[in-house]
Amino acid sequence: MRSSNPVFSREGSFTREPGYAGFGTSGQAGGPYGNPYAGTQYAQPQGQGPLTDDQLHQMYGGPSAGPAATGRMTLDDVVARTAMTLLTVVVAGAVSWLTLPFENYGFAIGASLVAAIVGLVVQFREKISPALVLAYAAFQGFALGATTHVLNTIWSGIAIQAVVGTAVVFGATLYVYKSGRLRVGSKYRRIGLAIGLGFSGLLLINCIAWAFGGGLNTWGGPLGFGIGLLGVAIGAFYLTLDFSEVEEAIARGARQEEAWRAAFGLTFSLVWIYVEMMRLIASLRGDD
Image (cartoon, rainbow, N blue to C red; front, side):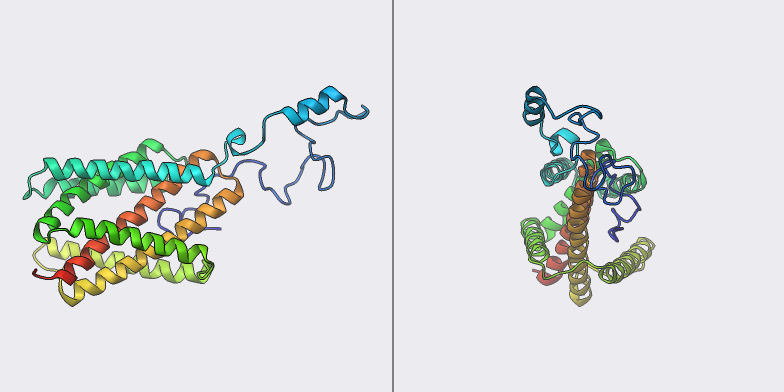
């Protein structure tokens, strides 16, 4: 199923392991009710009698055909890659926070642009590249560290509040998704995607206008609060698509390296929520 998440929206985002979970696949050895070991190292050659004791011992003593043996993606793979990617974001953010001058926004803007370009390459590249995913995380973390430093100087403690808020949104979204209260259907995807694209487009137009001396202040007042709240909701929506896509990819037997694509999607969504959470908190705290 095709996802509406910006990261997973390309057809065939997760590569399927050939011949796995292939209901209806033609040419399956043994047929639907034939020898379950047909086409494997344990297949019984035609014209021979029952398996010997040595053959049976080899069959039951051989390696398991589980994910570790076949190279298929597991949930553990996704968790490990996501943790590695998020750690890269945190480390790069800490370096940016500690080394960049408070008044210097140029490095943050440059790192953000590079992260956006690398993210687009990762999204549209047919074969996933772990190096590019980690590069995206590093540049994104560098930009976030500088931005957070500025905001935390204006509103002391906003960084910790945004991290806690992001964790709460992630946990609540995962709970609602796993409880079955939320169904990720085609209509849900289409509506959410339309809202997300419209939201991103408006923010982009406002940023361009702000660069030329116009635009609206989206980091304070009722407008900032409304935009932040909507942004957090859209980030939670993207998370539900991530969860659904990961489950479907594992069920389809996606290759193990595709866990990096899932990690990229989850990191994208969490970074989105973190930024919008800072906007929301800044609007609530006002001039304090």
